[in-house]
Amino acid sequence: MRAGGFDAVILDVDGTLVDSNDAHAQAFAEVLNIPFERVRPLIGMGADKLMPELIGRYDEALAERKKALFKARYLPQLRPFPRVEELLRTLHDRGLRMVAASSASEDELDALLRVAGAQDYVEAGTEADRSKPDPDIVQAALGKLKLPAARCVMVGDTPYDARAAARAGVPFIGLRCGGWPEKDLQPARAVLHDPAELLVTIELQGI
Image 1 (tube, rainbow, N blue to C red):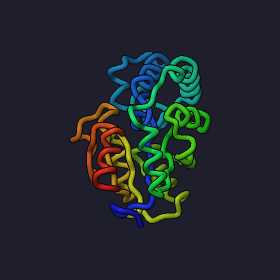
Image 2: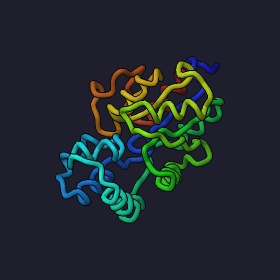
Image 3: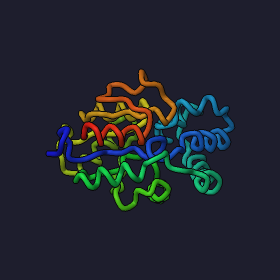
Image 4: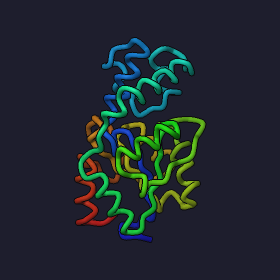
Protein backbone atom coordinates (compact mmCIF):
# COMPACT_ATOMS: atom_id res chain seq x y z
CA MET A 1 0.00 0.00 0.00
CA ARG A 2 1.30 3.46 -0.94
CA ALA A 3 1.95 6.49 1.24
CA GLY A 4 -1.39 7.86 2.40
CA GLY A 5 -2.94 4.39 2.25
CA PHE A 6 -4.03 4.27 -1.41
CA ASP A 7 -3.02 2.04 -4.29
CA ALA A 8 -5.22 3.55 -7.00
CA VAL A 9 -7.03 6.71 -8.04
CA ILE A 10 -10.48 6.78 -9.62
CA LEU A 11 -10.71 9.91 -11.73
CA ASP A 12 -13.63 11.88 -13.03
CA VAL A 13 -12.61 13.56 -16.30
CA ASP A 14 -15.00 16.37 -17.27
CA GLY A 15 -14.46 19.36 -15.00
CA THR A 16 -11.71 17.51 -13.13
CA LEU A 17 -8.98 17.02 -15.74
CA VAL A 18 -10.53 18.92 -18.65
CA ASP A 19 -12.28 22.31 -18.47
CA SER A 20 -15.44 21.07 -20.17
CA ASN A 21 -18.42 21.54 -17.85
CA ASP A 22 -19.62 24.77 -19.46
CA ALA A 23 -19.27 23.22 -22.90
CA HIS A 24 -21.47 20.27 -21.93
CA ALA A 25 -24.04 22.64 -20.45
CA GLN A 26 -24.07 24.78 -23.59
CA ALA A 27 -24.57 21.74 -25.81
CA PHE A 28 -27.44 20.44 -23.69
CA ALA A 29 -29.02 23.91 -23.50
CA GLU A 30 -28.98 24.27 -27.28
CA VAL A 31 -30.35 20.81 -28.05
CA LEU A 32 -33.04 20.93 -25.35
CA ASN A 33 -33.85 24.61 -25.91
CA ILE A 34 -33.42 25.29 -22.20
CA PRO A 35 -31.48 28.19 -20.60
CA PHE A 36 -27.84 27.44 -19.80
CA GLU A 37 -28.44 28.50 -16.18
CA ARG A 38 -30.92 25.65 -15.67
CA VAL A 39 -28.60 23.07 -17.18
CA ARG A 40 -25.28 24.02 -15.60
CA PRO A 41 -26.02 22.87 -12.01
CA LEU A 42 -26.87 19.39 -13.30
CA ILE A 43 -23.64 18.81 -15.23
CA GLY A 44 -21.87 15.85 -13.69
CA MET A 45 -24.93 13.65 -13.95
CA GLY A 46 -25.25 11.46 -17.00
CA ALA A 47 -27.91 12.21 -19.59
CA ASP A 48 -30.05 9.45 -18.02
CA LYS A 49 -30.41 11.65 -14.93
CA LEU A 50 -30.05 15.14 -16.38
CA MET A 51 -32.67 14.96 -19.12
CA PRO A 52 -35.53 13.74 -16.87
CA GLU A 53 -34.73 16.62 -14.50
CA LEU A 54 -35.06 19.12 -17.37
CA ILE A 55 -37.68 17.70 -19.75
CA GLY A 56 -39.31 14.96 -17.69
CA ARG A 57 -37.90 12.02 -19.65
CA TYR A 58 -34.77 10.53 -21.20
CA ASP A 59 -34.80 10.95 -24.98
CA GLU A 60 -32.13 8.91 -26.76
CA ALA A 61 -32.41 10.88 -30.01
CA LEU A 62 -31.85 14.17 -28.19
CA ALA A 63 -28.98 12.65 -26.22
CA GLU A 64 -27.32 11.60 -29.47
CA ARG A 65 -27.82 15.08 -30.94
CA LYS A 66 -26.16 16.58 -27.87
CA LYS A 67 -23.19 14.19 -28.19
CA ALA A 68 -22.77 15.05 -31.86
CA LEU A 69 -22.95 18.79 -31.19
CA PHE A 70 -20.47 18.54 -28.32
CA LYS A 71 -18.04 16.53 -30.43
CA ALA A 72 -18.27 18.80 -33.48
CA ARG A 73 -18.44 22.27 -31.92
CA TYR A 74 -17.02 22.17 -28.41
CA LEU A 75 -14.55 19.30 -28.09
CA PRO A 76 -11.95 20.85 -30.44
CA GLN A 77 -11.81 23.95 -28.20
CA LEU A 78 -11.31 22.16 -24.88
CA ARG A 79 -8.13 22.40 -22.83
CA PRO A 80 -6.90 20.58 -19.73
CA PHE A 81 -6.59 22.37 -16.43
CA PRO A 82 -3.05 23.50 -15.56
CA ARG A 83 -0.50 20.79 -14.69
CA VAL A 84 -2.86 17.88 -15.34
CA GLU A 85 -0.34 15.80 -17.26
CA GLU A 86 2.31 16.48 -14.61
CA LEU A 87 -0.13 15.32 -11.92
CA LEU A 88 -0.90 12.11 -13.77
CA ARG A 89 2.75 11.39 -14.44
CA THR A 90 3.56 11.91 -10.75
CA LEU A 91 0.81 9.53 -9.65
CA HIS A 92 1.97 6.97 -12.22
CA ASP A 93 5.60 7.29 -11.14
CA ARG A 94 4.53 6.66 -7.55
CA GLY A 95 2.99 3.39 -8.60
CA LEU A 96 -0.69 4.26 -8.40
CA ARG A 97 -3.09 2.88 -11.00
CA MET A 98 -5.63 5.31 -12.42
CA VAL A 99 -9.04 4.49 -13.85
CA ALA A 100 -11.59 6.90 -15.32
CA ALA A 101 -15.09 7.04 -13.83
CA SER A 102 -17.05 8.99 -16.43
CA SER A 103 -20.51 8.94 -17.96
CA ALA A 104 -19.01 9.81 -21.35
CA SER A 105 -19.32 7.32 -24.19
CA GLU A 106 -16.20 5.35 -25.10
CA ASP A 107 -15.25 7.52 -28.08
CA GLU A 108 -15.94 10.75 -26.19
CA LEU A 109 -13.94 9.57 -23.19
CA ASP A 110 -11.01 8.62 -25.42
CA ALA A 111 -11.07 12.12 -26.93
CA LEU A 112 -11.24 13.78 -23.52
CA LEU A 113 -8.32 11.69 -22.24
CA ARG A 114 -6.31 12.81 -25.27
CA VAL A 115 -7.13 16.45 -24.48
CA ALA A 116 -5.87 15.86 -20.94
CA GLY A 117 -2.70 14.10 -22.11
CA ALA A 118 -3.92 11.21 -19.99
CA GLN A 119 -4.05 8.32 -22.45
CA ASP A 120 -0.72 6.88 -21.28
CA TYR A 121 -1.72 7.03 -17.62
CA VAL A 122 -5.46 6.58 -17.16
CA GLU A 123 -7.32 3.39 -17.99
CA ALA A 124 -10.81 3.76 -19.39
CA GLY A 125 -13.51 2.65 -17.00
CA THR A 126 -16.28 0.20 -17.75
CA GLU A 127 -19.89 0.96 -18.61
CA ALA A 128 -22.52 1.09 -15.89
CA ASP A 129 -26.31 1.02 -15.91
CA ARG A 130 -26.79 4.20 -13.88
CA SER A 131 -24.79 7.42 -13.86
CA LYS A 132 -23.71 9.48 -10.86
CA PRO A 133 -24.78 10.14 -8.16
CA ASP A 134 -25.58 6.42 -8.21
CA PRO A 135 -22.40 4.50 -7.36
CA ASP A 136 -22.42 2.16 -10.38
CA ILE A 137 -19.60 3.87 -12.30
CA VAL A 138 -17.37 3.99 -9.21
CA GLN A 139 -18.14 0.35 -8.43
CA ALA A 140 -17.28 -0.58 -12.01
CA ALA A 141 -13.92 1.17 -11.61
CA LEU A 142 -13.32 -0.77 -8.40
CA GLY A 143 -14.12 -3.98 -10.25
CA LYS A 144 -11.59 -3.14 -12.93
CA LEU A 145 -8.95 -2.31 -10.32
CA LYS A 146 -9.77 -5.44 -8.28
CA LEU A 147 -9.11 -3.47 -5.12
CA PRO A 148 -11.23 -2.79 -2.04
CA ALA A 149 -12.78 0.66 -1.80
CA ALA A 150 -10.63 1.69 1.17
CA ARG A 151 -7.44 1.29 -0.89
CA CYS A 152 -8.67 3.69 -3.59
CA VAL A 153 -9.41 7.40 -3.65
CA MET A 154 -11.70 9.21 -6.07
CA VAL A 155 -10.98 12.68 -7.44
CA GLY A 156 -13.92 14.65 -8.86
CA ASP A 157 -15.44 18.08 -9.17
CA THR A 158 -19.20 17.80 -8.66
CA PRO A 159 -21.61 16.94 -5.85
CA TYR A 160 -22.58 13.90 -7.92
CA ASP A 161 -18.99 12.62 -7.81
CA ALA A 162 -18.91 13.09 -4.04
CA ARG A 163 -22.18 11.24 -3.51
CA ALA A 164 -21.25 8.40 -5.86
CA ALA A 165 -17.92 7.92 -4.09
CA ALA A 166 -19.59 7.95 -0.67
CA ARG A 167 -22.18 5.38 -1.76
CA ALA A 168 -19.39 3.15 -3.06
CA GLY A 169 -17.39 3.57 0.16
CA VAL A 170 -14.48 5.29 -1.62
CA PRO A 171 -12.68 8.27 0.00
CA PHE A 172 -13.15 11.44 -2.06
CA ILE A 173 -11.02 14.46 -2.95
CA GLY A 174 -13.02 17.34 -4.41
CA LEU A 175 -11.72 19.93 -6.86
CA ARG A 176 -13.46 23.31 -7.10
CA CYS A 177 -12.35 23.93 -10.71
CA GLY A 178 -15.57 22.35 -11.95
CA GLY A 179 -17.59 25.21 -10.53
CA TRP A 180 -18.92 24.03 -7.17
CA PRO A 181 -18.01 25.46 -3.74
CA GLU A 182 -16.41 23.38 -1.01
CA LYS A 183 -19.68 22.89 0.87
CA ASP A 184 -21.17 21.06 -2.14
CA LEU A 185 -18.22 18.67 -2.49
CA GLN A 186 -18.88 16.69 0.66
CA PRO A 187 -18.19 14.24 2.17
CA ALA A 188 -14.54 14.73 1.24
CA ARG A 189 -11.13 13.82 2.57
CA ALA A 190 -9.99 17.18 1.17
CA VAL A 191 -11.26 19.93 -1.14
CA LEU A 192 -8.67 21.69 -3.30
CA HIS A 193 -8.81 24.27 -6.06
CA ASP A 194 -7.63 22.27 -9.08
CA PRO A 195 -5.23 19.57 -10.29
CA ALA A 196 -2.27 21.91 -9.82
CA GLU A 197 -3.03 22.27 -6.10
CA LEU A 198 -3.55 18.51 -5.83
CA LEU A 199 -0.11 18.00 -7.40
CA VAL A 200 1.50 20.32 -4.84
CA THR A 201 -0.35 18.56 -2.01
CA ILE A 202 0.84 15.17 -3.22
CA GLU A 203 4.43 16.40 -3.48
CA LEU A 204 4.26 17.69 0.09
CA GLN A 205 2.11 15.08 1.79
CA GLY A 206 1.68 12.07 -0.49
CA ILE A 207 -1.61 10.42 -1.29
